[in-house]
Length: 288
Image (cartoon, rainbow, N blue to C red):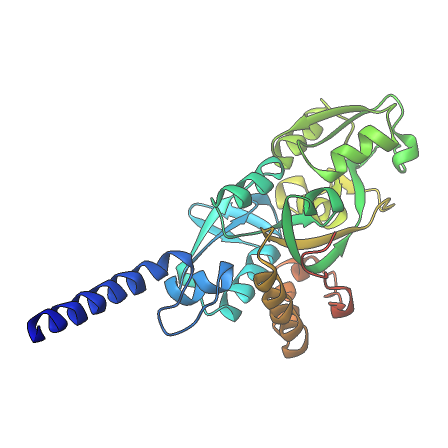
């Protein structure tokens, strides 16, 4: 009987160990933490996959295997706050149309890619932020007579597929002829070649393109914004804890100088002063 009792205890211990080992699949850190979602993965794996743009100078630009820009620096700040070193970030190129699918399918853990927070997208994913407020504008050739969106009737306007700016042109300025590509860089090429009359997206993205040396003197940003675009950090819809943690990290970045340093190292080179990060406008995570 004693032998049977010892065997039963050993079997129970083995079963307990087996169940404990399985816990790593749901984001447990293995140190008694029950954190889930992005917080749990950061704790347990010490690495993240983050989606960023690859063709937006000053925001998200890929050169070789390296990514740089304001969005990239914000992503590094968030990763650091979650306990993940920048060297352990896997960067994944995203375009406007695949940001929600990438998050939903688990291709990426976060998206920091000039990603406007809106109610339609919040039906599918969650947003932390906003960390920047942009406005839709127009980029045109330096000698263009286009002065704002009211000048677009009969004009060819280019934007990115799946983007908020493209949808706004379709709904608010239907007399413009909309051309869509999967990346804004293709719109810039079309503008330079005369295939389109204007490119539309957020003002700060357009300013980044116009400031590139190869376009010096060729383009101008009209400077008449016609929207408000709050840039958020996308993550899975049910990850409320992760969203709230990222908002805490953004609050800390606003007060400790790291947010301003991220701007100064990237978009600040254009001469535009760093904006104030208004932490009172951070999203109520998980609500539409």
